[in-house]
Image (cartoon, rainbow, N blue to C red; front, side):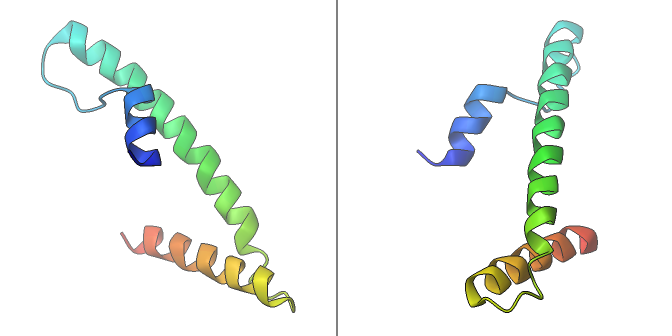
Length: 75
């Protein structure tokens, strides 16, 4: 089982199905999911500031984070 699977299991389904009670719960799950993603993107954004660092490991992490954020913007 991967981290993605664990998180999906913890947060629950987010896709609405057209049934009010089910969709109410799924909307709560969606809100929790977007809150988590927002926090994770903020963390990745903080790492992206290291892209111009002299230290190889910091620069590599920063460039990876920067590329990820650019990919999200393009999507």
